[in-house]
Image (tube, rainbow, N blue to C red):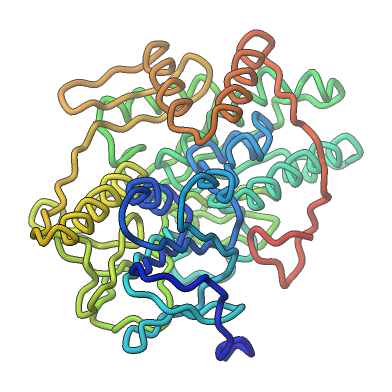
Length: 439
């Protein structure tokens, strides 16, 4: 129980209905945008004061981009919106009977609630992996990995034992989805084109990259052609791809796989999946598979005036028996649908069911190498890489961020350089470390 449970967040009174949105991710910010001219008071809560463009987190982690280039300040993003309020607060639970949100700094009443707090890294109950590996969900986590990686190479220069050099320069990526593949490709580019210039006294043949996935192919959510191309592109970076393989244990020094293979490595990157950020106070029968069960209108099962969108929402149907993919387009489209239904309700019209329009998926594996799946055809290579860059650039929040990222990409392409190889804050893991902790 928080000492602030009986305090209230100060939000100006209004004769409008209050919509509280939990989460400043893709779904949350789209909902605020879509409700801009509606007759509601909108309160957005997030534990950070910025929106993170998560698809490019791996570039921050691998020294390709600075963190502020993929982040947008939430207050600045909505500074022209009327009757909009942002509060930086960590939500701890909800009390649907009282129609109250609980946070670490107090409670907040709502008329309508939209849960859009996304997902977190799924360790499948393995606490040791949580403590010893690097996830890729938040900017602080990406910065931790960047510092750790660069510190390892600094230590490699000083190391005298071959076995220790192996541990410092070996990387194991767990998970062969888009994040795992993109991280592996970025590390491959660093190994081939960037790090040898920084560390001429290291023989980079010693640096080994291992990508481990429990499934039979990479990019399981994409076409088989894209999976094959991705594996081919990774082989050009000498990435050791191990399919139908699972990480059995990791003690911080050695990785043991389920086939008995032991890989000495001080860096394990966990990209093996995500699960919903479930909060306290929701009915148990409204939770399934780590997600909140919603109907075709995004209304939470068993609750009135409560919605869920994005990764956290499980809209189960015959077409999507496991729920919709946990990707940004789903969150954005669900936000638009909820906003339209709320506007329709004000006009005494009934809601329209959500229908997901799959516009395709893509992943990049490095310079001139990407795969794109569109509804009717698939392609890869240079053109796919250019499409990937354009789509991601246009999806970034803020003109300044787009300009900074484009400038970085052009510079990287022309020079094979990464300009952010800085150890700004030394990373030291301790027994109480939680991924993303600021030291």
